[in-house]
Image (cartoon, rainbow over the protein chains, first blue to last red):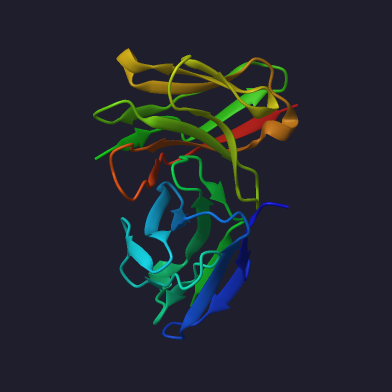
Length: 112
Length: 115
């Protein structure tokens, strides 16, 4: 089944403890992206990747890192999480030249 | 920069009634337009999209949307709402001329369906 998977789905952590949220897609998509969803703000892009080893900042990149060493994986790294990073995170992917993005199920993060 | 406005934060309709969710966008050229639905605790599911051509587009679950360039709108409609349609709905615009191809989302409209 074609899909975007994220792990973990739920995570509670404490301020300053490094964490990684994984994202994987099995559709051979070139483009991958991370969004965060906050009440009243919709979804905002954090980082995106046009292909392997090509990443760039979105609208709200502060406090996040990403890497794209393989085409299928696009992990989101929070080196030193803070409470304002408590949010619902979505990974998305799409093939090159196609505008429709496919979203993962989301990861709900709580930073205490 | 593009932007999307969904004026209605929360809408309540009776089951069987018609539905229209409003979406206004701001973008310099013809945009790509999308409607996504997010059921409670679920991810985002694409309902429909507009890229070009016929301005009335049909989607899944009986939804349709009409692109009106003169009004910069892309309103979502359904003739008869079902209880299972209760969810949050997001309008999004994609830019054709930016490399990062991000989707810009509206703040969402939460739909409640009364029996």
